[in-house]
Length: 207
Length: 234
Image (cartoon, rainbow over all chains, first blue to last red; front, side, top):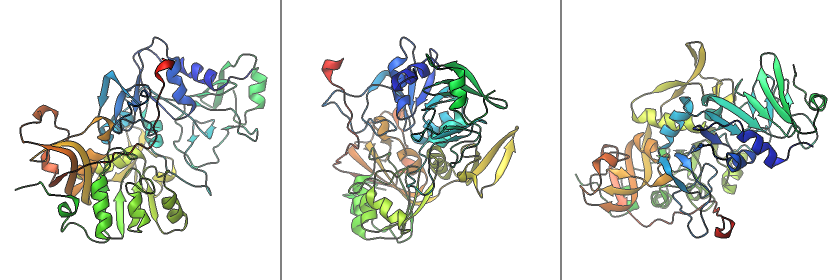
């Protein structure tokens, strides 16, 4: 059985080590926080916060306390606030250990596309280009194929890039793949999924 | 020299002109200079370029200036939540220069620090890098980005003292610090002006040297996405 959204998030949480400072993207990556267990993980929100807490209780929302998805959140004891230039200074400066984010396409050389589709409405890249260029490890969590059944792991991205050669690891509903010299390497398969099934669902070169 | 003005309109007196570049603080609707934006709308000034991470929503923030067609160009990283913005953008009535969020913040910070250009690896190999100078440092490629020197900065803080020293609250600090730094003139609106000496000098987030004019006012502080959890669930 391929992994569902929660299982993908649970698998992604295994990438995180005690003491890490991490930035989680919107969607499935947000769910990763539910699976970190006893590990002390400090979540960065790029609008200016380290130590992001859960959503507030009803009635305790604070307009001055939101995450990068503009959702109301809470602080923790170890929370620190800072301005946007400082926030992206720590991102660009390689201080953030890992970013876990979604993607529309990943190429076998680590190119990542997740910010625009030509001809469709472009809303902007937000902080995605800074994150993929700056953090020490980029982990993509996404479905292996799109809704038409086409591979999202490609020889070359067809969409405009968010970053060139930036992806380290891809966690899909079928398994875990690393970007290595010459293509992708299967690291792990989801329970009941075979390597042959992954190869059949993948356009990118698998070594 | 007194920095405190009665209201947003008087605080902007003599500062506004058509086709100027304004840097605005805020992230989404969090920490936006809502009173100064309303006063800019009321002034009728037009052809404005805004360096601002976002463009507000239809009836709040920079959105109100889009509705009245006073904005010519946006320099932003994300503009998703505004139907009128999208209409003008698709019709070609509004120019948009997308900047990676950290690049936009650093362009403002650099401008405020007297730095006309800097190199970053953000955007290398993407559309953002097209037409920009590339340079290798220690085996890695970077692109040059320009500092932003705005004609005017408008920002929102939590508290100020009478000399313009500012403190912000939680994530409402965001772009207010770099935006405030990069304006030739900076006007700040705050929730409370306290007597000079009442703020801890060790805890000032933006020193008053950057802040030329100051107003106190009531803020709506609208929440864009109200997300909560239930107590029973915990």
